[in-house]
Image (spheres, rainbow, N blue to C red):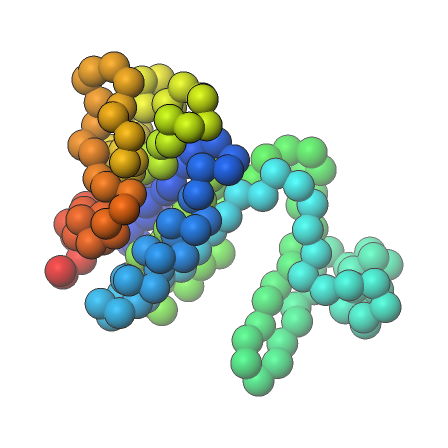
Length: 175
């Protein structure tokens, strides 16, 4: 659903499950294998790339609908969400990536969107897993026994290599 030309794979779990920690390891391991990774994170709060007093912040605060910050190292485009209070649309957000420079986009969150997702599950959090009610969850990353059956394929949380192999196979990328 999200992108016809670029493989997209999501990671979902309740807050505190270690999604971001795991994704840092995944991105580094994929980079070692030569995969160019894009990353999209769904934030449940407001955020700013710059701070009060900086020119770009003040211009945006004055009403600029888009603000592009550029340097020799990187550039970032901030676009004001016209639908304040509404969650961003996954497909729309993915359309902003430049597919020519990427092999794969990893998404953190957007758990209610319809796309392939990997669930990070930890029994210690005391929360029910998402996979029984989400048919788009294609794998479970955990070191805990999953409650109930059937469940999607299980990948170990303590060994990242099987997860990397799974991601590459699922995305149609070379191992």
